[in-house]
Image 1: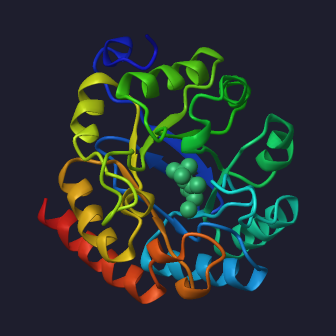
Image 2 (image 1 turned 180 degrees about the vertical axis):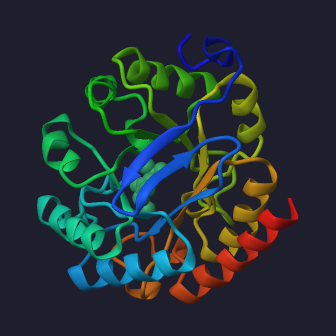
Amino acid sequence: KRASREYRDHESSVVIVPTPNGDVAIGENHPLAIAAGPCSVETEEMIVETAMRVKAAGAQFLRGGAYKPRTSPYAFQGHGESALSLLAAARAASGLGIITEVMDTADIDKIVEVADVLQIGARNMQNFALLKQVGKQSKPVLLKRGLAATIDDWLMAAEYILAEGNPNVILCERGIRTFDREYTRNTIDMAAIPVLRKLTHLPIMIDPSHGTGWSEFVPSMSLAAIAAGTDSLMIEVHPNPKKALSDGPQSLTFDDFERLMVKIKNLETAM
Ligand code: PEP
Ligand code: MN
């Protein structure tokens, strides 16, 4: 299998993402890469301000959804195509690489114009038509783990992308369904980090925001993921989480994010 460690002779692969600020390497033995930003792109002002603040705190990527996979069809679905130009403005202002979700094969051509990394959301992890199409693209793909996907299901989903010729896949753990949703939205599978490291050469990202569902748990899980060996983190940050159009409860404020980045840097130097 293309994702297996044996396929690359037990050498980890590194995904190099060209961004306006320069190439960012994501993989084992490279500096921790950080993606931060709102769940949804809301306005130009908020996305540009968020980009500048997370960049100043040390992030390399701005995340933000234009097309949102909401559980309810009545919930905010993202601003769609108009949000792509807001992401382009934030990219131009900050130089950060852009990570944004692709939900439909019909949108890929528009999204690759602005995105540096194409995100496949948890709910589309086994949308094989979509996986094949992003597999034909030259942009790296961030493949989130399905809500109830086993590690093998997830690695097979990665195979769909790799088999089409795109070798640049990053695996993102974002929490899975377990029996208790009282205190956390999902159960973040920290053991996935060493398990993936054993099974695959692909780079690993952890999303403690969706992984816990609550901003107060994001710092501890971010640090735990670094200690466990993650290659990168994706963290939801919003200028005013209480007013966010999606995922406010799990979003950090700019101040929270700055404090977390100090802790992350301290942990990295200690390791
Ligand atoms: C997101 O990143 O905002 C998102 C919708 O994530 P997931 O697909 O993991 O639920
Ligand atoms: Mn979200």
